[in-house]
Length: 355
Image 1 (tube, rainbow, N blue to C red):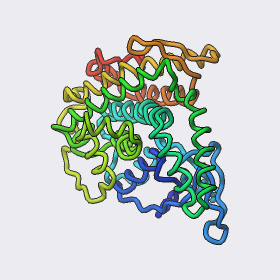
Image 2: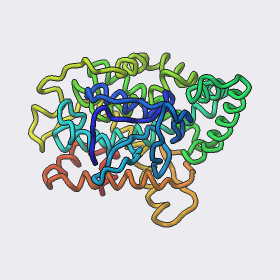
Image 3: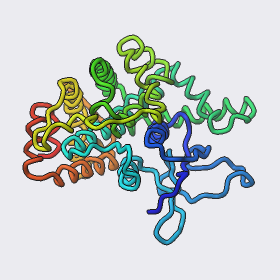
């Protein structure tokens, strides 16, 4: 893959993954151009925007890169792209050098991208004020000049489509309490962590910070119902989300990662990080393992218990792929590093992912 600045990507303000990548690029001081569009389609203005290739799955953001043969290609998956960018642009890295801490970063990033997003989608398309706001704004982000009647009709169509997709992310009457309780616990744990820490894994941001930030741009800054919860229960989280928007001027120092003063096999975590990992183990671990089982046994429905309550949804193949990716990272650790990781994650419910 060939990279050249400015990197070109297409996205919209309401996409948490677009916001994740834009904030990360600003922090990394990598030049970029944001192209306007919606659901894999650039605005239909051929004189202004040239035709671009389509990704295999139309998701946002879509990056336009060049392959080894010189052909332009479109890719969407932010997690592997972040790691490729880290290799291409090594300064201001967002992947910790300590391999155990890097794995913890990957686990938290995956949790934000794949579990915290359940709360984002749930709140946005379950509660009337949130549905109304999203229905008003999403079509206007795509094209602000459309007639008002067209805007209303497109808002209605978008809302109906997204509400019908709640079942794919696992939001339903059975799972509602689990999603909302998990969200509330997480924001309180993050708020407590921020009383003594600037970022999740030290004094500099990791990719997991940007993943959490991406979801919070919706949950804290846009959608009315979760925003009111955050302002009431976790105001530091609201403030942190706004600060994360642009860290281009944030300077990093030696020793900013949690692990830089520790040997690789002797990583110690603050209690607040351990508490966040335990929350991930409480909810996301049993979900991932149940999803894996459902896919391997060709089940049409994933049925399990999370935090003492029933959970039911359609299996999600991409999240099985995510589990395989973090397992591969675990197996790349040395034997001593694996033992160290198992030691520090004992009792958190995280190590079960790697059994």
